[in-house]
Amino acid sequence: MTEHAEGAGPLPHVGGTRPWGARWYLWEGGFLTLGRATGIVPGHAHHALQISVGFDGDVGMCLGADGPWMRGGAMVVAPDIPHQLDTMGIRMSVMLVDPESREGRWLRRSFPGTLTAVPADRLEPFRDALRAVHEGTGSAAETARLIHAAVRVLCVGPAPSHALDGRIVRALETIRKMDTARVSLETVAKTVFLSPSRFQHLFSEEVGLPFRRYLLWRRLTRAMLAVGRGATLSAAAHDTGFSDSAHLTRTCYQMLGQPPSILLRAGEFYELPAPFELPASAG
Image (tube, rainbow, N blue to C red):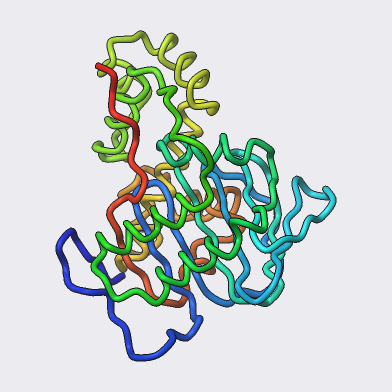
């Protein structure tokens, strides 16, 4: 992976329009990938809000294993919903947004269904915003700002004012800062002064996902970062808390529809600061 920290130089760009080979922008808790794709990504579910958009035509999506297919210029899938994606052999992008972030909650309010087509009045501005990402020459921080601006195009109304329970915000912050190979329910519960059972109940209630399932998702996104940086699957699995590379591969297939060896086998990789931050703790 080509890594760019805050204040680093521009992302590499050779004059003219970039070829649509796979480009991956990876950050803690999500990613944006752009490129030409073929085939159907089989059923999978992940704890992120997914936005898929076609640049040369429509993308196809369906819920579950045999739900009716929907086609549109851009589709939004709610977090934790099993779905399939027909890439249609076109240039397209897929973005995963942390649903606990302010922008994630804003998107959920703007697209309250499980599978929703982006309205026509927001489709072209969104495509244009993603083209700006693809053709940009800024630093990692500037690229993150462009991704944030692209998502803002899709959001309607004022930013959500309802915040997560402050204890859960602090727990999420703790998970972000800790080595995921060492995180446990008991450790995180202790940091917010709750018993493990009470914390587990509150976490599921606020996040909509059991703690251990959420932690598995965070481990997967960190493992993808590690693989993008050049780590082997075995090393990435060990460093992020998976039992072995087979466990990492199974989890990637279940949550993203493909094994990491297929997802990250080619293309350009960039690590960005997270474009979407958690809300501030209320104290």
